[in-house]
Image (cartoon, rainbow, N blue to C red; front, side):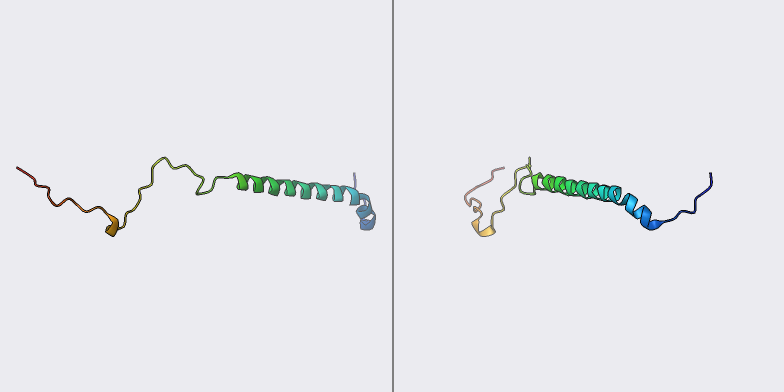
Length: 77
């Protein structure tokens, strides 16, 4: 088989216009679905305040609010 010298680009553009538009529309639709899916996954993801922490947080007490040590404790040997 030999390569033909028929390189009529205008004719080829007219013949392939529909399939190229269809492929482009399909790719755009797939991209929209991908971004929609990723957006819904990100919206449903737990944030830093939603995460459950098994270890309780210690509450820091300011030094002026701390209870004073008892003064009348004696240690016997």
